[in-house]
Each structure stands twice: as C-alpha cells, then as structure tokens.
Length: 330
Image (cartoon, rainbow, N blue to C red):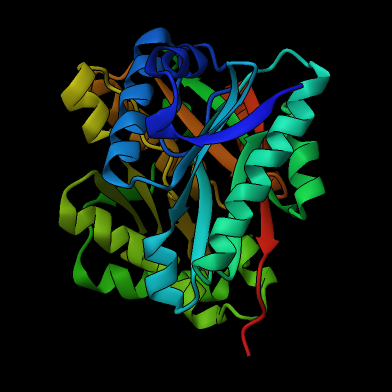
C-alpha cells in the first residue's frame, strides 16, 4: 500500500475532475448539486478556490489513484463576528466504493487538515456530510469530530400549488426598518436550534445577532428577497428567498440558495404563518422560472418537518454537521 498526501497543485487535474464529477453525494454548502452541469460547475469553483488559496486544499492518492480531496477554509463571517477562529472542511470529494483503503486515506486527509487548522490557531473545525457517507463519517469520528446538528433536506416541485396554505389575513410585503428590530427580538425570544449554542465560547447574544443580521444582508445586498408577514399591522415573521447569483451567471440555471431563511415572532407560533410565507415565496420562485426548490429544516424542528409533509415535498437527504474542538479559549 502506497498512500500519500499531496497538495492540489501537484495532483493530476484530470483525475481530480473525474473524482469531483463522479462524487455522488450532494454537498450542502449552499445550493444543491443535482446534475452533471452543476457537478462541472462545482469542480470549477473548487479549482478556483485551490488557485486562490494555495496550501489549503489537499489530495490523498494510493498508487496513483486519487481517493479524496478537501480544503481547510476559514469561516470569516463566524470568526470575525464571534471573535473566535472557526474553520471548516470544505470542497470535499471522495470515492464511495467501500474499499478498505478508503478508511486510511480519509483519516490521513482529515488528520492533515486538523493539524493545519491547529497550526493556524483555529478553535473549532466544522464539517457537513450526507448521512449515508459512512466511511467518511467514521473517519471524522476517529479524528475526534463529534455530532453537532442534523438537517432534513427536501425538494419542492414548482408545479405544485400551495395557495391553500396562504393566510387570508396575512399581508406579505418588503421589509421596513422596524422589521429588523422585530427579527432580532424574534430570534432572541423563540427557541431555535444552532450548534453554536452548544459551545461555551460562543456568546448567545452574538449568535442571535449573527442569524438576525442575515436578513439585512440579503435585503441590502439585493442578493435575494426578504418576505415579511404581517397580520393586523403586526410583524409575524420573515423569510429569505435567494436564487444563487453565481450559478445563474455562469450556467444560466435557476437554483435556490439554501440559506438560513425563516423566523417567526412569538405571537405567530402555531398559526400557519411559516407555511403561509413559504407558499408565498413558492409563487415568487415559480415566477422567477425556477423548476424546483430545495428546502431544509433542523432535524429537531418537528413542526417544520410536519409542514413539509403537508406540502408533500420529496425527501432529499439528511445532512450531519460535526465539530472538532481544537483549543479551549480562556
């Protein structure tokens, strides 16, 4: 057995292309990868990332056959906002033939990434994986990663009609300034799951503002649309709708971006507001020409999962988020 780890720039580009184009598990890094055109697009993105940040993307090969590749990437929006260095294992791809050699290759790659993160004084290293990637997940566990969170992903067909879920007494409009205060209040007063709450170093106030700020970022950057639900003049909830601008520009395909997207005010809980907002966004996505929509819900968010059942969306997969603590802070 001759397993070795090399940098991306030293690997055979065509073999890397084959690895990424045949990687069968859709990564939940943003927009879903669901056909060959998007697989090819993703490979181009990974190649550009490797060229822009040399020394961060590594490859493991056995007797010349590439078995896996992944990048160590700083999560700027978390690190800068929370004041703690957080990085992720990103742009990963690996063979999925269940051969015994894979386990050693995956562990070698993950150990190298963890050591690199440690040298860069990263406190937490995160990774997401499809639940069916058992060899990869076992290697993550052997490296010290532990379960942090889980998400259910589903496909919504744009030919479906969800108008029966719209609320007759709810107006859906664009945001006004006071809505952003209501969004922050809602995140601070409605229980919602986040693996960030599980680590003592992450201040709850900073985590809450991180999620709340996403709506202003989407609205001000015009990267998508923010839908505000109002009943009797009172704020009820907010929902993001984002068509991935980079995929649209490069491929012409209309694909939604899986971005943190819905929050309800305490007064709106149990009143059908969430599904009403999703139904409204569904019609907007359809008007924009999108053939289907990917949606996600925390695996513990039973009301939303039941809402998906009411919408008769199709199950797409389970995403597992794992985390590795590399150093304690104070």
